[in-house]
Length: 192
Image 1 (tube, rainbow, N blue to C red):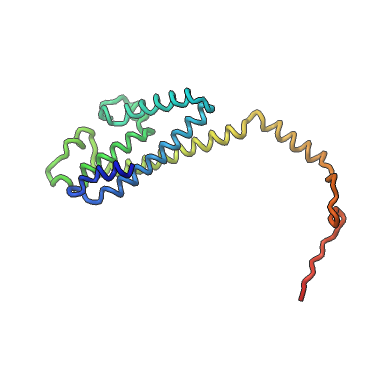
Image 2: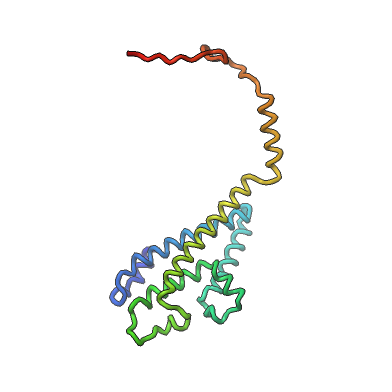
């Protein structure tokens, strides 16, 4: 990833200081996609075929609505809404904005790549905010699924009943440790 960003740093003469923002964007994307993968790992119950199929199909679907193949303005409203949850959309837009905006063109000049995708310089911070939102969303879904799987609803009542029953029938320990029993008193002596 860092090598890819270093190769993209050829624009440093036109747009200086592009290396660290790109690195930060790719790190945010990697963390978000890791949460995305955790969600599908928990949903597939460890079945590798289901996991691979779900991950590839959904990632391709999210890439299709990510403003990469078609501008978002040409998509149906449902797909425009669904693209909010697309990590590839926001990394692609932020990548384009870093390379082709921020003072690269003059006052009356328009960058044709940004015009085709209907992007403005102000959209960069929106893209970063949405990357962070998706990162938090996929991590929150992962935590919820993990807690739900480790603590199933059907086992909660029976588990509580077993705990209460064990506490009621708690016996004294069978072994005896010299000097310690339930009637012993502990005294603290201060040595001067």
